[in-house]
Length: 145
Image (cartoon, rainbow, N blue to C red; front, side, top):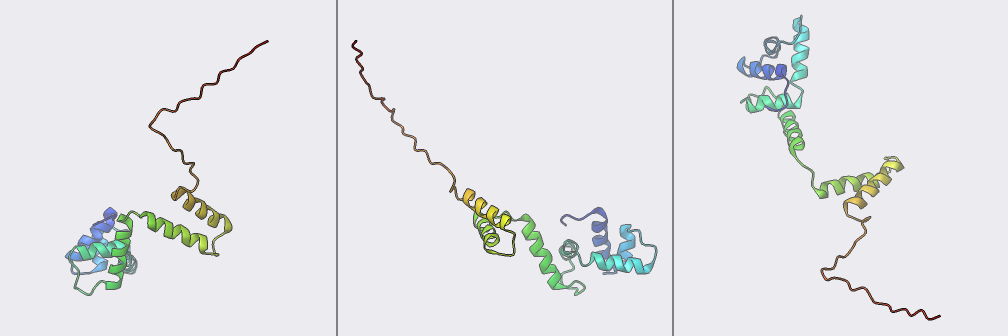
C-alpha cells in the first residue's frame, strides 16, 4: 500500500477483513465518529480516495464489485504519475502547450519560452577548445630616436 496514513491503512485492512463493511472498518481504524451516519459519511469519503481504492484492490478485492473499476483505473494512473519521472520530451511538450495556450498570462507564456530556450541550450555561448597550443605572434619593434 502506498502513501496511506495509519488510519487509512487500518481502514483498508478492516474493510477487506470484514467483507466490505465501511462503517465497521471506520470504527476499527479509530476514526472519531460518534454516530452511524458520520461513520457512513467517513467511509464513503474514504472509498472515493484513489489511493485507498488502489490499496483495497491490491489487498485482494479485485473482483468483488464493491469498488468501482473506473475509480481503480484513476488510482492506478495517479500512482504511475507519482512514480514517473518526466522526460525531456514531456517537459518540452508541457512548456510548448503553455506557450501556445492564450489562456495563460503573457508572463507565464514568456517564461515557458525562456525555459524551452534554456532547455535546448539556445542561450549558451559555444567556445571551441583546441588541443594544440596556440603560438602568439612575435612582433619586433625598433625604437630609434
